[in-house]
Length: 269
Image 1 (cartoon, rainbow, N blue to C red):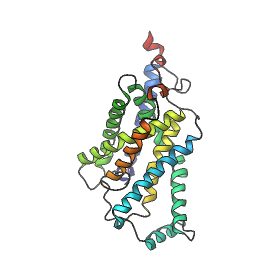
Image 2 (cartoon, one colour):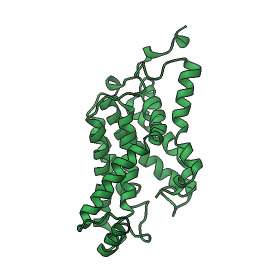
Image 3 (cartoon, helix red, strand yellow):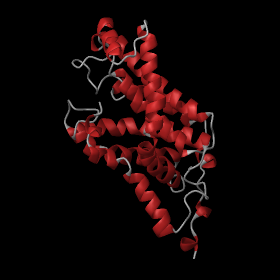
Image 4 (cartoon, rainbow, N blue to C red):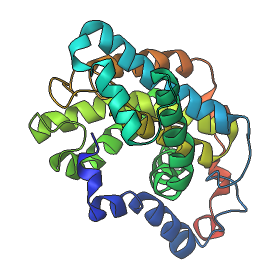
């Protein structure tokens, strides 16, 4: 599932949204990045540093569990899973204990080590774009717009095999857009609840890292990423239902840390 993320160029692409936002703040707006608080670059909402990633990981695991009920053959036999865990030194006499260890290592250690890369995306989409869209259109329209552009932004990586290597790139981008819209709502929810963009980055990282954990239990053959797991129709349905519930649990405009009055003096002159 990593596909296009294997290349150094694609990994650098992850930083582009944050780079654009920082240049915009420093060069054009001439506005401080940290003191205003409207980008969420702070250590607030510490309880959500655990709740957000755990919630997203649980949704990802749920998508795999439902996929198993629909197609058990896409998963490796127990002996193969144990063998894979043993080869990594992560088998402790119980398969589920080993898989839990992998999930914790990927979800906690992996997320922390890769936090700059995920902040690279989240500063752009959750920290900058979506909060400003709330001031010019209805929240759902804002999420549709930001989700569309977030999905399109992955087009280059999808062409290199990210998530949907078995379908043509155009269809892969369509799947990505359908996935990014509900994921954007869920991640935005935890950003607004915590007021920290770091929580959004950790929540985003949890999804990617839980998919890495699944590599221990999935067969190389027979796993259709357009149907199963977090990237397929199963995952899109799980994330969409969850996003629909969260959407009505918050006043998006009231919770928005960015206000129009926070425009820089250059724009007010």
